[in-house]
Length: 262
Length: 275
Image (cartoon, rainbow over all chains, first blue to last red; front, side, top):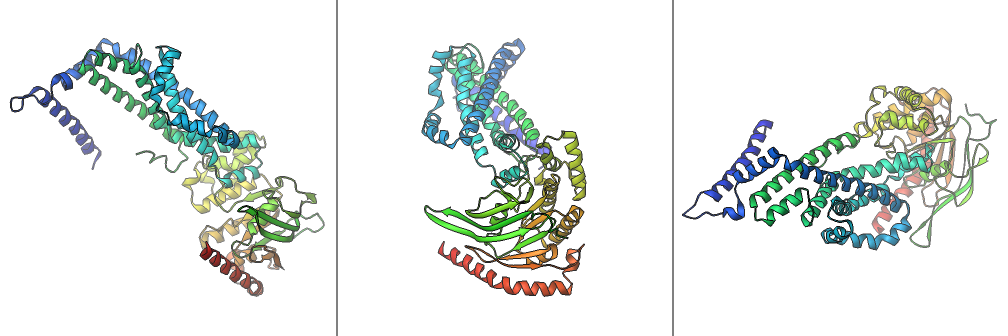
């Protein structure tokens, strides 16, 4: 299939889906509207809501807040994950002692922490950042831990025979290996940073995409809920695209970097 | 050729290597091996699969400590890693996240050489192993033979006094092995380092080495033979195999090695059945 046919078919799916949606919510079939507009809105209303958000500029404030929360959650969670992952991998005893607790916290559905974070950190961005951090941290932590543990013994021995001391082994062997594992989970961890931010906003906040959706839901504005969802998906796709670019740059040395996650 | 006036580059004296396996059982890989490599001498160790050839090499490298016996490097007892040795591993040992050039330069960089200078010399070494145009490739973009060339440059750029090689050309195809063998001899001829070369290929051993040492089948492998190869140098690997002396020596050594290979084979099939 050529590129243009593919693009055409992909567009066709969207057009058909929107048309069916519009049809079922506005035109009666056998004297009855199958999708009540009160619950399903319709694409034109949703579209005009999105246009209104952007033309009035209200949306930018919310987008920037969500973006900030995601970035902070990602950075803090990653740094903490890398440090602790390294520490545990290099100190098997520490890892063994903390193992059950790590498993326990990781098993906990993170949403239940949201109320606590709101109590501790208030309704501002930090309670959302904290929720994102708990999600990102574990992904990065497990990957870095694995990355350090699975460094090939031959490569390590080679480093030693080439005269590397522990610090140099860290820099030239463990660190790149751990980073490569971390980067291979970049899509997942960035995605979770956004999830943390949006869910946190949804559960209680004064700004952000989650807040926007929650507000619309509160006044039964279904068009607003859908509009928020569309903006959110577009936002995540953009971020994911950015991650792909970064990944391509950082993992050039990996044979699978090109294939990556299809 | 081999300089006997100087202390031996590597001297193993009654070295025994044992591993603890499954609880209290001890597996003796190598028993009372005595071996010395003179300054500038090329010694090949040949033995059946699983006889502990690599173990012996790891002892000389300081990666393994013998349970008994002593290891001396230029008359100094070896403590920790052997800092005079360069080690070419059997498996891929290049840093996959570094380019060929960076892989070669690293040995100088960690010694504190300025990066510019390290890269310049690395480029020179890549050229002398025939990979001058591949400096910016990552290891996964290179063929098996090319990776071995980078590995060779990576080791030689540090100018080690001793070269330890563990079946370095094992995974390569026959033609590439010959080419690599000739490259190795050419590079070695330039400054004649002491070489300890492990292989299971007797022909390769005779073609390359000044001395061929034969090990018995493991466990508790011993050194059971030591032949001097008197073929003239410089040699061409593919041509030297045609010579009469080569054949005679090959027949002589093979008559000893054959039994061990059969023993080793029998053991490996038996343990495979048991497992």
